[in-house]
Image (cartoon, rainbow, N blue to C red; front, side):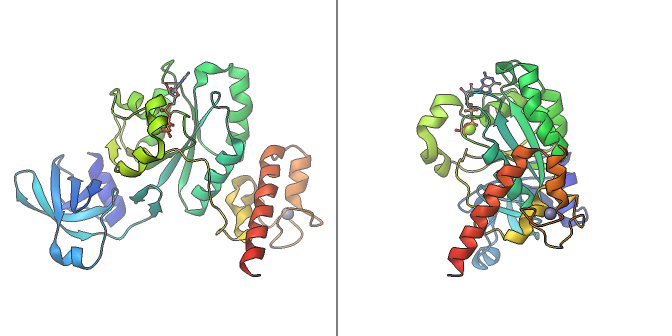
Length: 309
Ligand SMILES: Nc1nc2c(ncn2[C@@H]2O[C@H](COP(=O)(O)OP(=O)(O)OP(=O)(O)O)[C@@H](O)[C@H]2O)c(=O)[nH]1
Ligand SMILES: [Mg+2]
Ligand SMILES: [Zn+2]
């Protein structure tokens, strides 16, 4: 069903010999076809020699060679490529934050949002472990990001809360999960699939990086439509390659005010006539988000200085 939509979106048209790669290990790829078959495919020699590496998320043209087997003949141009995890054609990042245990790291969340926006991908925020906090406590976080313009869901696999809301957010997308270790990414996936497919909790953490670096990325179909890939938790992000001038537009609440400041290219710091600063003072932009923005801006400036020294 869904393979057809994705193939059509990536290739611009539909052909029955186009499929979605859900896993790629060494020379072998798993390809889901529009008719619902799953083929084990190797790569046509000519294509392999050209140096193309096939990634999960790739839309490929395949030929059947035997029962359940095929050959990848061509990789269609990618709409996006992520490096961590290594995956193609993702259009949405679900950023998972836990409301408690661990408490939300808004600094990390904002950085992940900046990266997502910089890649031109849609962001969707999931506030997990809702069973551990009161509604009022949860609201304080949720409101800040809803007001900034991000779609959100509030979930708890433990209390079976928010499943439909999340499934709706995943429907029709090729999504990758991101967020700190321990926030519940793998738990969410198991709960959505109603199947214990991914390692969770202490086991996942104890094995840590080793497990993640050896484990292959896999796209799995969601019961409400769409495909999703788990990714290892990470807590350090390098944004130093990002250009300083681009940063303001990566915050939707500031991007929307483009042109409102007195100076073009205003970085919303202490320039006179800055509409963003006014909006912060008037309570229209969240002061916490703004402060974290200033901190990141300072870091980027420092990185730029070092680069051109
Ligand atoms: N109370 C509560 N605990 C939860 C919930 N969801 C997950 N957990 C627990 O949180 C811990 C971490 O969950 P994981 O799913 O392994 O977290 P992860 O984000 O996949 O972590 P990494 O794989 O290390 O990146 C586990 O002990 C889960 O049982 C929830 O809704 N409520
Ligand atoms: Mg996990
Ligand atoms: Zn400004």
